Amino acid sequence: MAGNRKLQQEISQVLKKIEEGMSDFDEIWEKVYAAETQAHKERWEAELKKEIKKLQRFRDQIKLWMSSPDVKDKSPLLEARKNVESKMEQFKICERETKTKAYSREGLMREAKVDPREAEKEDKRSWL
Image (cartoon, rainbow, N blue to C red; front, side):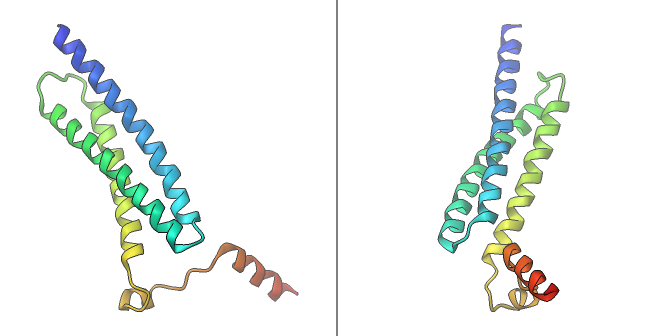
């Protein structure tokens, strides 16, 4: 009984850490795409990578608990695992975008990104 209670406490702690990690990931994600210089963007990407590694470790722990017969209610674990995996997919997209060379076939085929401020200026110019 005491072992089961301890396991439940440990699970709740990990789920709480995952929640915190997800919010940290979202904050860093916003900073990556709001970065104005390439150096800042690379720094935030490194932070993002550290955060996703933490979430992956928690996901591995969740997988271990899900395979254990001691855990009765597995729905919160399944939900947390799905959330972490969605963040992993999001990170993969970010990583793919940053590793694409500007003059590679994919880089040239990708449409040029326009800064929102520049787009607004261009819209006003065309209106005038």
